[in-house]
Image 1 (spheres, helix red, strand yellow):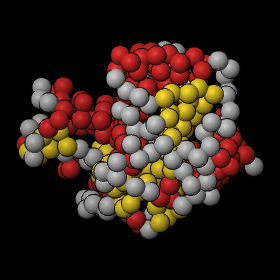
Image 2 (tube, one colour):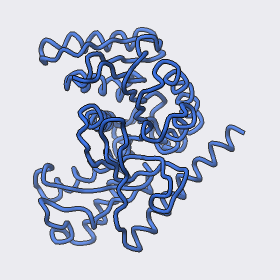
Image 3 (cartoon, one colour):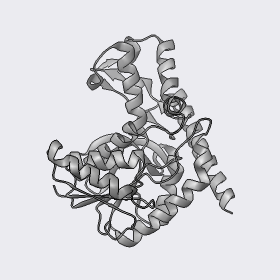
Length: 313
């Protein structure tokens, strides 16, 4: 392992699952789990470390309420914040979670100024911007986790619909992390076979709509929380691509500087992840409907940023 330390901020369901996966995959020698709740990160980290002899992994998991142990971390995965409850949109979380992310990123800047930050806290695109502004890091080192999760949901639904292996499904979901996300049917295939040859348009439309509502579907079932297994797996896949310099092409929320005709905002686009974080943004060709959908999604992100600035004014 070339990475010495990865820190997960937030020891709730998403954060704790992240730390377990990071340790199990041995992506760092030490995995630090930080949370303000006394005893929670310590207890979960100890429980995870005690699973190491069974799982056969040597990554040390350490729980803490402060950031001293996180000093010098190579990567931070920020999951801290409140989760959605039934009837609550991602945007309802806005002001509370912005304050949390701003506080966390101030600590990150102090203890690990050369680190890479993967933001998971919702509303995702706006929280990534808060993280970028607070840390002052270059865009290559502040990336939002959204498209990996949204694309995984899309792929999982297609696999159910067609009764095929998820391994053979390639797909791409762009745009903001929310109901305006843009699953691209034109870039979706099953072992190279275009999805449009395998499913009627009305079934594709239904899968796209289910993908957009995927998080809410789980919230409705759980009633007292939101998804965490898939979000954690998505964040850890991004971390793995960076740690191993895999140069994976993954849909992530990136700070756009002219790409897709947009500036100074986070939006889900195809990104190459490897050593140093974001290595490249790919601009794919979109048809008129897809361009309109992406523009609409971007407008929703901009309006949420404006709403936050109004709340904090």
